[in-house]
Image (cartoon, rainbow, N blue to C red; front, side, top):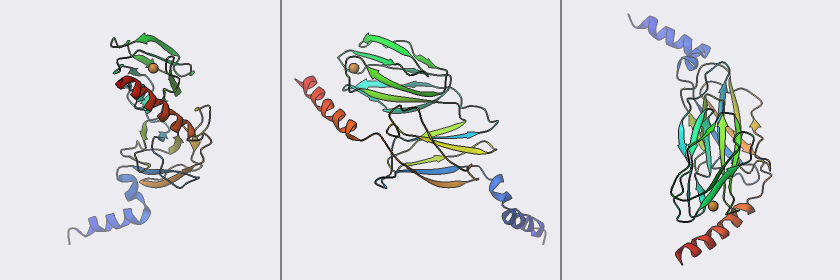
Length: 223
Ligand SMILES: [Cu+2]
């Protein structure tokens, strides 16, 4: 009989929905391509919580191998530093003209230049002056929580700070300027599971062209 009040309290919490808000706040988001219904990998999912602190800045690496950037899409908190080591035997000249991170790392091979500071939220589009097909994206985020979708188009965000959660999604093929986001019309609920279907205006063709150039480069390297 001594456990009865506890059971009753649990039942009340469940009934009022308070139970969810006491549990860890989490969100599972699945992103798909509206045209095909296929899962979209490399989508950046950001959950901003009003009043919550930004994510802690980190130190990241985007390396170049076989004349490609790895990873192709990164997301970092504002104030993070990113270095660009070259793992090819040829030289690269890495740059970005994007307002969030304007930089220019003149031709280099093994001597990695000092890391670049990204202190403004936005999307930096990276290129290489030598290899036109090389492209990568650094999403710099002011949000407390973010992640990149896996091959199933999914992210699981756990331990979201309490408060109203605003969901935004970005993808390299969303639109040409690479600066716009898809924004959810409604805040996320606690322990929310959502599907987001993105209409992509940038054709995938560029990826195919990229792989042709990639193969040509690989052949040149192996000769
Ligand atoms: Cu290059």
